[in-house]
Image 1 (cartoon, helix red, strand yellow):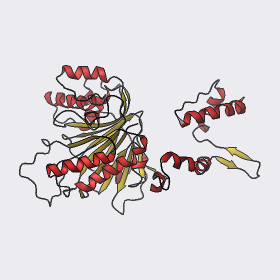
Image 2 (cartoon, rainbow, N blue to C red):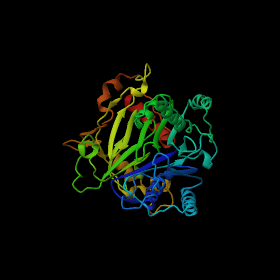
Image 3 (tube, rainbow, N blue to C red):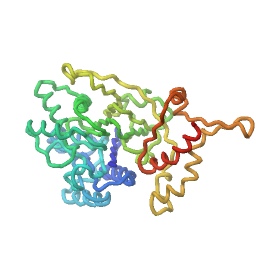
Image 4 (cartoon, one colour):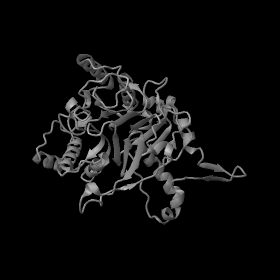
Length: 405
């Protein structure tokens, strides 16, 4: 299962070395998911978000500079080694400071194409890295999209299903500019790309045309947003539509995107679980959420069809950093086995209710209580699982058959 991670610092100085370390550590937290290659993308020294106190070359053009992409087969440490080797060879300044910067990272489990740098993520729209994408999932109609893009002059370097996504984004962007729409927004490009995708995915987009912005969207695959406010006076708000979190107010903050809470918890406990069809746009320190509607734009100019905005609430993660480390155990499976008694107790906590006497006990299942009438009318109950959850389903089936007659 692939893992995706992104880090955006806004209005707070972070050196390139620090940014790399955050991205690498995010990938390390996702190692348990399994992978065979990894990659990252950061900005080069032409970024418009340079520290104003740092001297800049006289011919800076943020739109003409390409993001740096590093990809490597093997484990994360192989990626780290290759990145620092390439940095040394190109004399890239690791001490350079960015007030705002957006970086993305990925661990890949090969499905389409062998483990190799060309098949690793981020996948790119072409030599200029106009659009970059990290992807968890499978695009089922990628062959049709690939054939269409090839007819329009695109060439493909990888064997992946993912490569069609950044190339499709570039096609949409170029077409909009050819038609004179110079104001096409990043989220409009992504929404148009989503209209053409079939399958399951979690995606993070980065583009040199939209510096210091990231867009995340999902359908089926997990994705979370973490929010870390760096002002002491902004610490108690829980509603995501609160101006403290949504508005472009200049407050320094760090934003994280990840397939898993494991990569976020060491930075912040304030998270938003992104839902299917939501498009999350990180821009100028603000976060906007749009709801994708595949019906909009089918009859007419889809780029001008404005989707509905969504207001969501942040959740607080109830876990600690120690819980995601292997601790004294040799591997995660051993750790999970020894944690089963505590995990079972935690799972039942708040769900086994005792009344006034020892015999008066009830079970409360919050996810089912609103649907009990429908369940009682059902003629069959189906359990769907994979691996450990499949074995749990096998064990639970005879018990529930007996209990429910």
